[in-house]
Length: 212
Image (cartoon, rainbow, N blue to C red):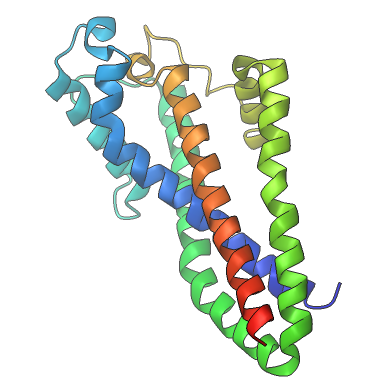
């Protein structure tokens, strides 16, 4: 497919933006999760204490200048710290992809459009339409096998050969404020963010193609 390299870079940029948007929105809405999931009763800590420790964790995971995790009310095991460091590196990878991808995507797409406007827009619109269906298929797969099994499979794919993500509440009590239902909400939020970006990109390319 002509211009597939440019489309791939654009797709990678949009995917990283969807992931980052999910991360920061989940961080923003976490106080509501505390209430909805009744975490105070589950861990025996106040809303403020839970929120404070979550803030410390998220700052560690997203701040490239912070490489020391010390939650004041939730001790961590060596395995727990190792897993959070692995997650942190993935978060920074996504941040890097977004920072590099935005200007690179702009440059490559503008250059391609100047050379062959109609075919570039046609290729992109078809590509965005196809990619918008992928999370729907994954969501249906997760629905049929159950979120718990899908969540386990997700970790096996993302962290092959690594079982440190299997937290035990006695050793890593922070898992009590990060229940499976919270991650389900995060997946749903990512689905919405991703679909909005893909739909927006599709309609923008279709509109520009129509005008041309």
